[in-house]
Length: 298
Ligand SMILES: Cc1cc2nc3c(=O)[nH]c(=O)nc-3n(C[C@H](O)[C@H](O)[C@H](O)COP(=O)(O)OP(=O)(O)OC[C@H]3O[C@@H](n4cnc5c(N)ncnc54)[C@H](O)[C@@H]3O)c2cc1C
Picture 1 (spheres, protein in one colour):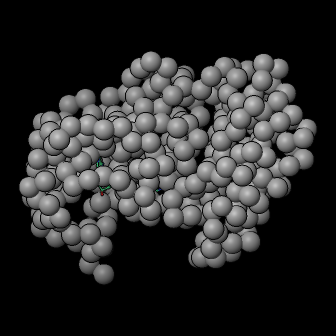
Picture 2: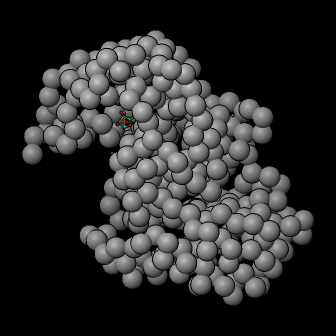
């Protein structure tokens, strides 16, 4: 296995339009280069080979994080560490800041970007798993203009996303959680990447006693992170009744994930962990229903 980088050129465009034109020109021999934490490693190992890298770190403002109409707009180039430390994200989307703080290690968080995480299509993505429940809109830009893509449509399969030739991810706009929404995230990690991530967002009634709607997703155990409609239906209702259905909901979640035995654990073990994490996340999300929105992660 080669562990050296083959020769390539680097372009440093100053606009996304220029980056897109370069990518179109290079075709399959060109690739976007953001933090490089996945890309350069894959190139060193010989898994990917490109003659031209288009370094988007020279595009001004692509790492900006700003509040916008009840949402936080995150530039694709924002690093995990910037998001973990952003006062805006910490105050408006605390669950997201907490999940970002537990991605990888400080070295990867310092240069790895949210855009790179999502565009690599890594099935073991913590942000993608949480974002499935936060329902963001992704803005994708190419030579012919921009379009908005929901995250489930963007995530096509393992290491495959819905970007056309020459298109780049520009930003991710994440709606803020409302006063009666609570969120929690659980993950388990043995190696460099998570083995299982579980995200939960609950809409509660005024008293916090009834779940009026629920979103639950798991990551790392399917080709892409996934939600389960069947599990979500079981999480709606009065708190005690929902608590009594948590095992059933966890099984629905596991069934929809098509769990496999692999080097990280058996399908049976993963099913067990989903049950444990769903219970923990539910208790956490409903623990202090008088507190403000946003939830906690662990
Ligand atoms: C040791 C290690 C541990 C990790 N642990 C975790 C973990 O615990 N949880 C987790 O969620 N992730 C984990 N990761 C993944 C990590 O989050 C990603 O490596 C990182 O976010 C990728 O961002 P990057 O900017 O370095 O992407 P790059 O390596 O620069 O790019 C990755 C891919 O995305 C494409 N790309 C990048 N930006 C764009 C864009 N704006 N538009 C279009 N295409 C783009 C590139 O062309 C390339 O194909 C880990 C990675 C490593 C190396």
